[in-house]
Amino acid sequence: QKEVEQDPGPLSVPEGAIVSLNCTYSNSAFQYFMWYRQYSRKGPELLMYTYSSGNKEDGRFTAQVDKSSKYISLFIRDSQPSDSATYLCAMSGASGTYKYIFGTGTRLKVLA
Amino acid sequence: DADVTQTPRNRITKTGKRIMLECSQTKGHDRMYWYRQDPGLGLRLIYYSFDVKDINKGEISDGYSVSRQAQAKFSLSLESAIPNQTALYFCATSDGPLGHEQFFGPGTRLTVL
Image 1: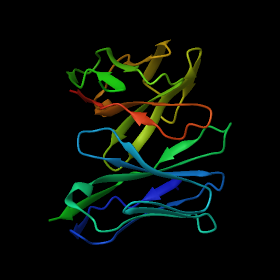
Image 2 (image 1 turned 45 degrees about the vertical axis):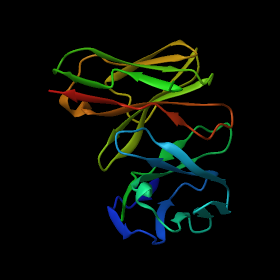
Image 3 (image 1 turned 60 degrees about the horizontal axis):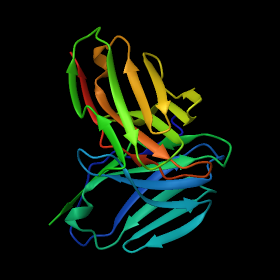
Image 4 (image 1 turned 135 degrees about the horizontal axis):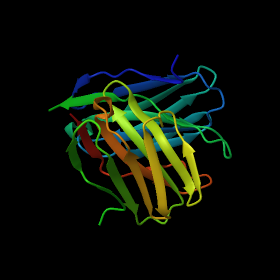
C-alpha cells in the first residue's frame, strides 16, 4: 500500500465550478500537508501548506486536513481555465524526521 | 533569472552511455533534491543532500549517483543509462530545518533509447 494515495483523474469541470481534490495517507507521523500545482512542462510550485489538522484559506483555494481520517482536500471555488494543471498533494514528517512524500497528482481541466 | 536551473532541458541518449544532469540554485538553500517523475507514479525521490557534506539515498537510488560540488550545485549521474530511466527529472531545493516548501527547477526530459 502506498503511503499517499491520490486519484490521477483526469477531472474535467466547467468554468465556475467548485473543484474538490483529495488525498489519503497511511502514515500518522505526517505533520505538514502541502498542495503543489504543476503546469504542463513546468516544475511543481507550492500552492498551500497546512500544519496538523484544520482548514486554511487563500483566495479561491481552501485546504482541509482531517488527521483522524487521514484525509486531506483542496477546494477550488469559481474555477478558471487557468486552473487547468496537475495538482499534487505532499506530506512530510515533523522536524528532524526526513520524509516528504508526493501523491501521484490529479490532472484537472477547467473548460471555458 | 530562474532561482533553480537545470541543464540540459532535453536529452536523448543511448543505452549504456554515461550521462550527467546538472542543477544550480541561487536561493541560498542548503537542501537539494533529485526526483524523477513518471506517469502514474508521480514524483519519486532519487537522492537528497542537506548540506555539501551530506548525501542520502532516496526511494529509488539504484543506477544513479550524485555529487554536491558546492552549496549551489548538485549533479545527478546515470553511469550506464537504460531505457527504463527514461523520465522527467526534477531538481528541487528547500530551506532547512523546517523548510517545507520545495522549489523546483524546470525539469530535464531524458530519453534513453
